[in-house]
Image (tube, rainbow, N blue to C red; front, side, top):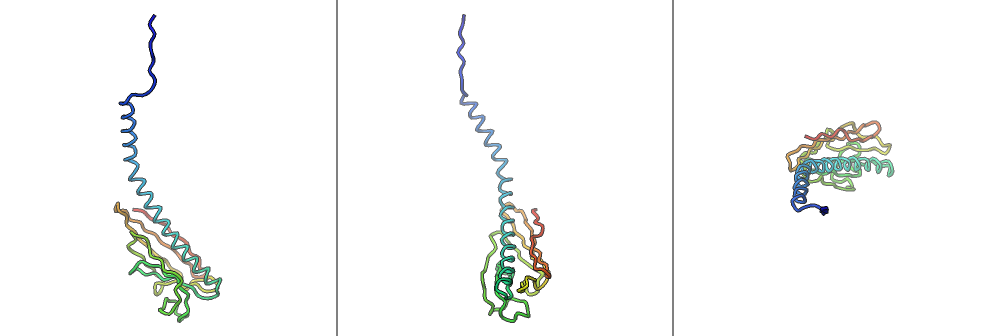
Length: 167
């Protein structure tokens, strides 16, 4: 009668095969993960712009004075200000009180609006100076293009994020 010994465990070759398979699967997942991270960063930036605009509206209502957001495509900034100089013109003037200046993140290349004088002003009753849109565009290292918009309704001052496109 022969007794066979059973060996338990894995061999070095089996272990190396498992490591190679994990490496291949990881290499396939990294580009998708990178693209997802870039999309999330873009969406977060868009939400931050909407939040800043909603904050300007809240300040106008709370402090009972016109508060606005000025968009600059030259230096890709968003300036929140109190409209004290020439409030009937609904624009950002040199003498207005600046509350904050935010620079868009790296990768953003275009930041435009169809508001007059590139500014939207929120009145003390919460309404906006005009209905309009803000558009922004960014590129990623993988040559992906992200495009988004923010819409403002004049009668209520409602600010919402429009559709975001990823190419």
